[in-house]
Structure formats: C-alpha cells, structure tokens
Picture 1: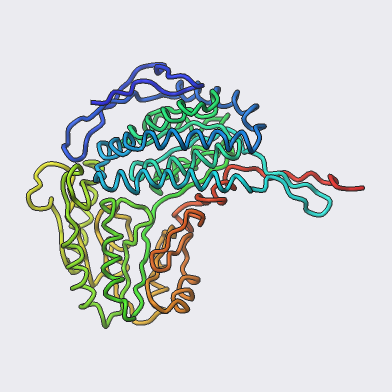
Picture 2 (picture 1 turned 90 degrees about the vertical axis):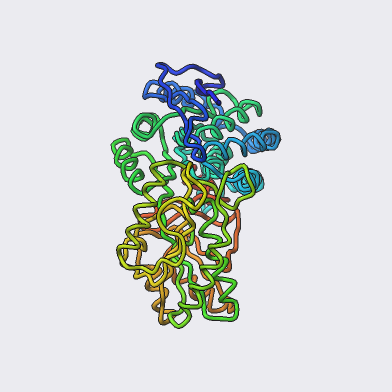
Amino acid sequence: MREYLKFYIDGQWVAPVELKTLDIENPATEKPCGKIAIGSAADVDKAVNAARRAFAAWSQSSRDERLELLAKIQVEYEKRSADLALAVTEEMGAPASLANGVQVGLGAGHLATAIETLKNFKFEERVGDSEILREPVGVCGLITPWNWPLNQIAVKVFPALATGCTMILKPSEISPFSGQIFAEIMDAAGVPPGVFNLVQGDGAGVGTALSGHPDIDMISFTGSTRAGVEIARNAAPTVKRVSQELGGKSPNIILDDDNFAANVASGVGSMMGNSGQTCSAPSRMLVPRARMDEAIAIARDAAAQVTVGDPGGDFNIGPVASKAQYEKIQGLVQKGIDEGASLVVGGVGRPEGLSTGYYVKPTVFANVDNDMVIAREEIFGPVLTIIAYDSIEQAIEISNDTDYGLAAYVAGSDMEQARSVARKLRAGRVAINNAFDFNAPFGGYKRSGNGREWGKFGFDEYLETKGLLGFAAK
C-alpha cells in the first residue's frame, strides 16, 4: 500500500495545512492500493507564493542553465522508469507492457524533444527597428488527467521549465502515484526551490483554487470539456491565460483502396489501445457504404483478438480507470443498442471470466448514424462506431459534423488523395496512415480546447511577446 501524505513545495516535502486523505482504488481489484493527502486553498497559497518568489530568478536563467537542469531530470527519469510504470499500472490499470512502453516512453520522448527544441529556440528576433522578446508568462497552474498521466505532465512541465516559468502541478486524484514519483524525480535532479511544486487534490478543492488564484498567470488544463468550461469561468475574473486540451470524437476516414482491410483492422486496434481512454482516439470509423459488410467482418475479427485481463498479465488491455468511468461506458453502450446501431461485437457487462475489476468488452457498433448519441458523445472506452459514406465529400462532411476537433485520421495508399482529405478536416492534428511526430502540434478546434502542446508549439503557450520599439534605431 502506497502512502503519500506530503506535498512538494519550495523544494521541500511538507505536510498539508490540514490533513485530509483519499484512498486510491486499484481498478483491477476494486480495492484500495494507497492513500494520498488532499490539498486545500491554503496549500495552493503556499505553493503559489513559493513559485512567485522563485520566478524572479528562474525567469532570468540562461538557456544553458535550463538545458543543464533538463539533462539532470532526464537521468533521474530514466532511473525511475520502472517505478513510474508500476505506479501507472496500479493507479489506472494500464497493462505492464503499455505502462513500461508508451505510458512511460511518451514522457521520456517529450523531455528529449524539449531539450532539442530549447537548444535552438528563438527567444529574441529583430523585426524592422524593433526587438521582439519572448518572455516567460509567469507562475503556471498545471492540471493533468488520469488517462496518460506521464504524457500530460511532461507536455506541460518541460516546456514551462524550458521557457523560464515556475509552476504548481496538480495531477488527477484518480492517478496520483505517478505524479508523486515525478516530483521525487524533480527533487533528485535539483530543481531550484519553488520552480516546481506539487499539490495533490481534487478539482473542487485544488483545481478551483488554482484556476481562480490572482497570483497565477496561466492555467494549462487537460481533461473533459465540462471541466474545462468551469476552469475558464473561474479564471476569467483574473484574466489569466487559459490553455486547454479537452475532449474529442475523432473521425478515421478509411479510403477505398487495396489497403482497406489492413486499415480497418489497424483502426480497431488503435481505438482499443489504453482501453479506449485516449482523447484523440479514432472513435468514429468512416468506410465506403459498399464495403460496410466487409468492414464489419474485419472489425469483428480484429476486436476479437484484443485480449482483456489482469494488467500484470500478458493482455492487450486492462480495466478502465474507475467505477464512474465503467458505469458511463456501460450506459453509452446500452444507448447504442437502444438507438438501433448494429452491435458487431462486445456489448454491456464485463468480458467472460472477469467478475471483479472495471473491465469493458471491446465493442464495435456498425451502421451508425452520425446523429446517434454514440457518434456524438465521447465514450472514453474501447468502443468503436462505424459509419458509412457514399463519397469522399460526404466523408469529410460527416467527419467535421461534431462539436469536437482534437484529432482526425485518414488511411489510404493514395497519398495525394489522403493529403487532400486531411487538409479539409477541421481538427488540430490529422494523422495520415497513423503517422506520429513529437514535434507536431497537439490541440483542438471547437470544443476540444484552445492552445497547442508538443514541440516548439508547446513552448509558445508559456511565453509572452514583448516589442522593444526603436531598439535598433541609429
């Protein structure tokens, strides 16, 4: 049983102002696996004051000083990679192979990308007779979700550090263990006191205190659209910058070509990964109407190959992260059945042989209308909807007919056609044939948020722009 009852504030592990605790549940066993302290507005005040004091010096640090610190963090992150993976498995049910692989690997990848980006990032440039400066925005409140905990911590903390900001991190109270170990890594790397602070807690307590705090200059939030709206409201009176990566209902257009079968199967696999708990997951698969029956057969076989079980075993996916998430998914699966979509595989209830744990059957619906609830709402589980299209133009229209715009996908061998389709999709990131790039921006259109993360685009979020007019005048 883990027990984390202190926060990391001003370079020290400190007790909460008032000790309140929360039991953390292992979603595979439905039993407590640890306990954390839950912070309050008073704890946030302490962390903000520390970050404000530290900002004066850290904002003036040199590029080389920041690179040296990031390199030390890289060493410590590697040392603790196994500990991080085990924590992710315990707290949110990621299979060991996923936790040791992509879950921890994404954090390492973003750290390496931040280092390379910082080496040549332009903090000053000449425009006419003016000197344009990019300066750190200030003290940042970073609020991260439970589904890819290390990825989301990394895409906020490392750009903030690299640009000279100071910060307070609030990990999700559903997956807090990895965030606590991350703070231990920062401490071991020698981050200057107050530059990085950790306060555990829930949204109502710590999240609200951060988003409304008058001495915080920026909030970066990843989570649901509903919570994002509340954070924006809380932040509005202090006119702080708010950067948000929110929900998604991403289309995956499968083009009509010789790679059709492989692309349908790949789309199913991509949807099921991490138990479907990915905001950018390709949850709406669009296929030519004439090939719907073929797509159904391929998807049925592909979904049947997705094994579900104990995260410590050799399975593709584990449980979803919480009872609330499990119940939400079950309700939406039943809604799909009630709406008349064709249930290809899966359905309500746990997979056979699993009576304990928040396990969900890999589920595929076909002949889905884009107006159905399962095509409109983010299910956030291993549930795929297949929608027919009669023309490429209609596929693009259906793809863009959503409240969201976080990601989109196009799969096909005709690159000219794939590029043409990709240009017309209203989403912040469009992957052609499952391409991946740490340097490409990540963020959404419409109700999927605002701002961008990853690579140099993540740096931009943490910088103010200042013009020094007449700087170069003779």
